[in-house]
Image (cartoon, rainbow, N blue to C red; front, top):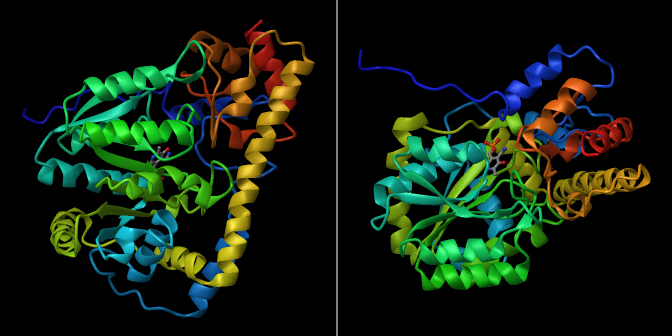
Length: 401
Ligand code: PMP
């Protein structure tokens, strides 16, 4: 027939497949470092206390269950834009940012793909870093774009291949669409420095590329939203017209509520009005309008001064626990006498650490030590706790001797 399904998800790289293997393992020492969700100091899913308080407030307000507008809850999208672009953002003050609520970061990326495939006149190709978050590739393919890669990760240094990145962004056609991770690059945990971002911004401007910024970890990288927003705000200040995909899955722990935004920095309010209307034309046949509960919770956290303060402290708490676990793992590897260079574990940023080990070593970690991670050697640092870090360090030392 016409309708053939081809291919299947690679269970060795797909965190869901890893969780399956982890569940089947009956050893009490087992550790799951495959999941991309924050875990507390006891390895449990974490609902932020500020989120619980915001939910209490939302429920006490007894709001109705009517449909939201196509572009979502205005109180939420207004506040989300200020959070990302900043209180003093010029395009916000000049009323030239078009924004819509989205089904978390994935939904924002899917709208971005569809929007650019339909309206970006200069290219149908999107360049993503190599490697990038696995889902980027099918999201943009399904949107009708062709996905290509630019250099990002340097295997030798387990760091940024800055020269390769610049070379590639220079050699691709002018006006290409370029996806950039705003902070806490997934899967590598390696971000350009502010100085390097400035250079990248200049290069992208010279080449007239169109930046698509994926911001799934605002606040999660350093513990400070304003620090982590540097890259986005710098690009906006430099006058790039760009699109932004924002997720509240990680920084509010609202994974399953699907809360995010898609926004477009336009040239002027007239263009913004046209973009707003095109966004509605795109979204209406996809899902009509977004869900209301998570948006109310997020809006409360962003606009209630006391809850906002509490939320920001909790974001910092999550980031600090991750940073602390990086040091502990590093120190234990030293203490065990590992001869390998592990400083990248401490230097990398955000939820993930890219260990720089081989797929065979990853297999041994699972088979011999009950430690589960994706075959690219990425661990979710959020899955490390004081209870399991020693077993992890010993296992890692053992397979890399
Ligand atoms: N972008 C990146 C880089 C991510 O890592 C993720 C989550 N793993 C997302 C977007 C989207 O996540 P969500 O749809 O849950 O917001």
